[in-house]
Length: 55
Image 1 (cartoon, rainbow, N blue to C red):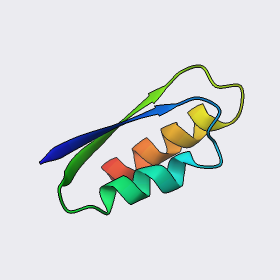
Image 2 (cartoon, rainbow, N blue to C red):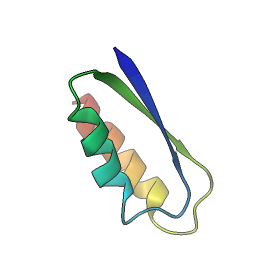
Image 3 (spheres, rainbow, N blue to C red):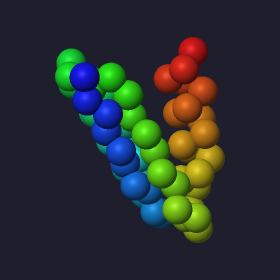
């Protein structure tokens, strides 16, 4: 299985699609998002994704 690490900086428009794309691959077992102090809504979106994906 593969772990995908996604660095995020001001990527609110793309982060959800990137995570979903990674998780759609059968080889991917987990996605780790590294949010680096974005000025946009990236952190909020990452938090929401975390809750969605765990549940």
